[in-house]
Structures are given as structure tokens and as C-alpha cells.
Amino acid sequence: MITPIRWEADRLLLLDQTLLPVEERVREYTRWRDVAESIRSLVVRGAPAIGCAAAFGVALAARESRARDGETLLADLEEAFKGLAATRPTAVNLFWALDRMRAVASAHQALPVPALQLRLLGEAQAILEEDLAANHALGAHGADLVPEGARILTHCNAGALATAGYGTAVGVIRAAHERGKVALVWVDETRPVMQGSRLTAWEMVKEGIPHKLISDVAAGFVMKRGEVDLVVTGADRIAANGDTANKIGTYSVAVLARHHGVPFYVAAPFSTIDASIPSGAAIPIEERDASEVRGMGGRQTAPAESPVYNPAFDVTPAELITGIITERGIFRPPYSFT
Ligand code: MRU
Image 1: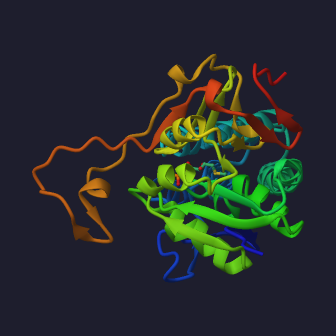
Image 2 (image 1 turned 30 degrees about the vertical axis):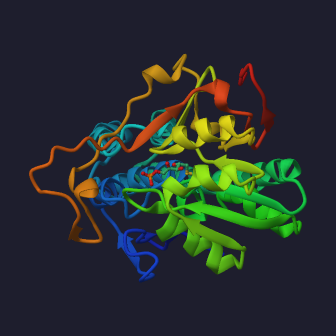
């Protein structure tokens, strides 16, 4: 089993995703600021995974504090809440997990400090375990939709690495593969950070799932040839109307899928739904460094002077989404998640 995040004794362990697929190195964290940096620098990435890591970041902040009473501890935690929230703006799971940790801290502030520290660690562990369970449940729901001998296209990495384990979109693929339904997974390489080729393809190899890596620009061609039966991707934030932010390029895949009559599914746990946002227009889109577009693997592939626009996510309008697969079942348009 691929375990990207785990707690051991007094520390958080993260599989460093920036080094995959070349090297499998686990890094250890005992300070919340380092956890924040690991989220910012993509050591840990993927919406549910950054929520889990941030929750453990808060638990670490509580252990770092010298407070002698709950009220002072809560005041100390504010800096960690702010610092962790400032790491990445798009995936709502980060803010969802921080809100959950804040609620536990304030509900139990009357406890002695060691008990409150333990309570916060317990909540982070619960977030991790619940995410894993949600992925198994949504994987099973999604696998029901997959036809025998399916050829499935996915974008980015919504796998075990992007979650507490098992994955969302890749969870659906895993569950369908366990039922013997998957003939082939088309893995989009996912420029510019290459989560498809570096991470999803790595997971496919580990699991022995038949797959072929394609450049992002080949997706339309394989659909035109009738070689894709369905698309399934993950999500970073789903608005109340079903509009879905996910890795840059997802929208292009959804448009291509509609043009070619291929069903386009999104798979995500309920922690990815942001009911406070009416539509995708209000989803904040992270912009990342120009160097990601001007080069690849440390090699310059564009003039250093060329201005760059590098949005890390895009929004797929609800009308292009055939269904949203969650742990509570499959939602269809018009979307309503209550
Ligand atoms: O920039 P990343 O790698 O964090 O982006 C990840 C994605 O866009 C995933 O598809 C999404 O978070 C879903 S993960 C289950």
C-alpha cells in the first residue's frame, strides 16, 4: 500500500513527492513551519493530502507551544493556522481541515494542555483515517460506473499520493481494476509539474495496472480514435453548483470529452465540496512560478526573458461533468449536495 502521510511516535512522516519516481524518500517533521513549507513546495500535494498534512501541522504546533493553559495554547495556534492557510489557495480541503482543528481546539480549551495536545493529534489522525475510508467508499461507487474492458483517461494525480491513501480518481480506477474491468488507463503527463507522468504512472506501475502515458496534447487524438470510454479526474474544490476546480488542463480534457461523447466524471470526498461558493467563478486559482513553464527537470526550454502565465488549476463548468463520485454516492446534474 502507498502511504504518503503517517504519524510515528512524535513526528509526521511524508513521502517526498518532488523526488518521485526516481527516489522514494520519507522526510520527518516535528515543526509546523516545516510542514507548511512541505505543502508550499509540493513535497505533499493533492487536495485531501494537504488537508491531512495541515491538520498534523496544527498538532505539531500544539506540541511546540510552551503554553500552560488552553487559552494561551489557542492564541499560540493562531500563527500556525494563518501560516498553514497561506500555503496554497485553491484546494478547499486545506481550509476544511484547519477549520476542523480550530473547532476541536476551542471546544476543548478547558482541558489541561497535554490532554488538549493529544486531542488535536487524535483529530488529525481521524481526518487521515476518514479520508482513507471515504476513498475506498467512493472507489466502490465509481467502479460500478466502469464498463467491462474499460479504457479510462485520467489527468494529474488523484491517487494514493494525493490523499491519505487509495486515491479518488485513481481510487475508482483501483476498485475497477480489482474487479477486472480495466483494459487500459491513459495517463496524461500533466504539464508543467508532471503529476501524471511522475506520480500517477508510478502508482500504475506499483499496482500493475495496464496504462499508457500520453502527452497532454494527445488526449484529443486518442478520444477521436474511439479509444477512451470514460474520463475520471479528481478535484480541488467543487462549488455548490458543481463547477469543479482541478489541475490545469482538466477543463480542456472535459471539453474534448464532451466533443467526442465520452463521459467525464469527477471523483472527490465531501471535504472537497465548498457549499459556501455558489459557482466556480469564486474559486481562487493559484498561480505558480514562471520557472515551471520556462523549463523542465532543471533544463531551460524557453527564453529566460519570456513572460509566463502559470495558473496551477482551472475550473470545469458543471454542465461538462457527467457525474460527481463521492463516498455518499454519485451526484448528477443539476448538482445539489445537501
Ligand atoms: O498541484 P497539485 O498537485 O496539488 O494538484 C493536484 C490536483 O489537481 C488533483 O487532481 C486534486 O488535488 C485531486 S487529489 C485527490
